[in-house]
Image (cartoon, rainbow, N blue to C red):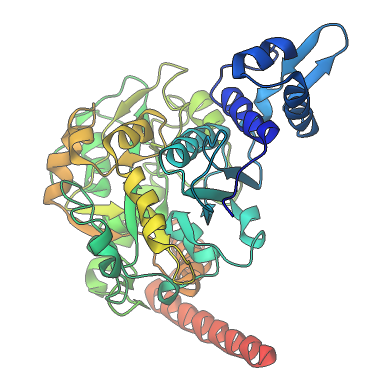
Length: 466
């Protein structure tokens, strides 16, 4: 039998959509029940039951003698899960295909974008219903997911590995030419010669400052850029705050893993030693700032410290509050010869019963209108070349097309943990003068021990489960 929602559930979906898109913002009075009944051609009893569902979920409040009032702000707060099933009023052709989607984003402005996208997607694709789980809380909500959307860090902690995802090539027949005219392609994100990630956007830091603008010279990485700033701006100290030490090292040509073998690897030790000694000199001279070791309120930091204790500060593009307050100027990030890849990806699990439908969602995220909205909402930079070319970041198209693409985060949970907990901290302590000597050999030994011990524990847990 076809699955048809009851009328009060259909009306609930319609009113929920109206609340989520701002038709009835927080505190606004909704029409009377008789008016809603007339508007949607249903009985007052149907409206009463729909409003009761909204009240049960704390989406509206009912004040005796006054009416129904919106509590839409609750939708801006991240909930562990949400169901999107489009607008199926009065009929359905068949049973819906349900996809369980795990997504990294949890901030209210991010969830607002996803609410709009998922709602629109299910309206356009009425055969698909989405159960969406936001953030880390979503990891334990279902036995398995059909697809994951997020950065490599998030995909790694999801508990799935490269062998759990469907290779992109197996689904090409469903969406030929999906990555035509895109600045990133799945093969750019290959791991151990397996291509399973669909890039839908990417992150790249910008440089914030207050009236201390500069011209970016092509070919200068961040270290050269800081040295150049000191000379051209005649600064005693550049006081440059990095966003990510891992990203910084890749920018300088020092990636600590091999994406082909999937192993930790320090190539060209002479180059590495030169780079880390230069960074150490910048730290000791106050040209780079050491702000690690404690949680930071970055919004407060750049609003209160930028232009005082900090002259230049890297900051990720994906924040809507980046330039709206405080007379903050934004300048391009100096990339040198390398494009540090921090992609936002979708990946489809082999366990799914509906691979084509999952890829249809990926295709929806790559549509021009969605890519534009992705940028407007500051979720990330779009991979669509034509959208980037029309933006104030058009310079990225020419710049990124010429650079070598290097992944910043390994697509492996154990190696990712090792880099985050050992590699980053050992280098930081070296830069700050807390440790000395052959830090690269020390890092290699600690990483090797970490990974071997991790594998032993993993094998032991597997034996206990059999």
